[in-house]
Amino acid sequence: MSEYKLFVGTACPHCRKVENFMEENNIEIQIVNINEDRDAMKELIEKGGKRQVPCLFHDGEYMYESNDIIEFLKNK
Image (cartoon, rainbow, N blue to C red; front, side, top):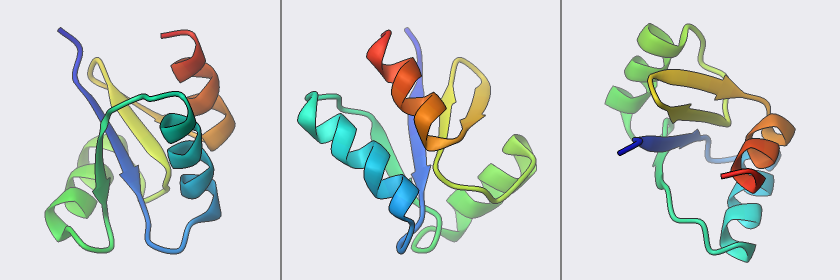
C-alpha cells in the first residue's frame, strides 16, 4: 500500500491549485500545513531536501511543482 502526504503552506496559491484539483476529483490524501506543523516542516526539509510547497510525498519520494503533482494524481 502506498503512502501519500501533501505538504502545503498557508498562503500558497500553488498549494490551493493542487488542493482544488484533489477536491474536484474526490482525491483524499493526508494534507499537512508546514506553517501550522513544525514537525512536518522539519520532515520536509530533512527528507525532501528543501522547504518548497506544494510537495507530494509518495512511495518514499518527494515531488515538487503543482503541475507535476496534478499530472501524477491524474494518472493514479
